[in-house]
Length: 318
Image (cartoon, rainbow, N blue to C red):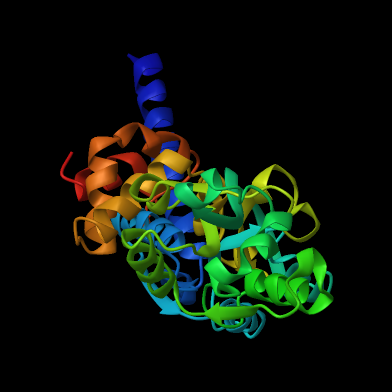
């Protein structure tokens, strides 16, 4: 009886100690950790990943804020502690921003969240079949292209690469013009021109529903500006200085967050084609693919130290 009593007391003490430890971990995060502030350049892929992260964070008891900011302003927001997280650091396209802020310790790299992305110039399949297969082929068809390259919002690193290419005279494009607009503006222009079978060259990337919605082809020859393998890219997670140390639980989640091309394409499809709100689309994906939650939540707790996986599953009505 004495032995059982001793074991019982030890078990109770251990349980109480673990409870206090969990509460201590939760309490150790400063109040500012309760709201996670994201930046979004207005791109469909980052809109989707921000939504996926937000749904999970809300299931854990956090709040989120998402600010739509051009890439340069988003980096300044991280530097000035006005933004906590950026899930859209496309590399190598944003290398100059990394070189500017990371060595000074003003922005921190958490790690890679997506592999297998691509980012370079593309044309409709009928233009490709007509002989436009490489950057060097564009000048041969300059009249058909109206000497225009369609790109995304002003200030985007990729636009700057394209403008440098035009200014340098590479590929005989010195007299060409870069037409800058937002992602939706480019997609609308592509849709209009393809409907009329007109030639158009535009900045294309994956993940994005355009790859399924348009019969398009990526051009070779742009390695100098976009890198090898059709601008093969990785996407990284960034935080403001010291964020992972201050907000260790969120920091652990950010380290765990890994996305895939198919995941992002599906969520973007729900948003852009089905008209769903981003978090509605993210909830739909996570409800259909709950297996992604376990690795994301490894070592993570709720804000009060509870079971993260159980809480997020409950939040999703699973």
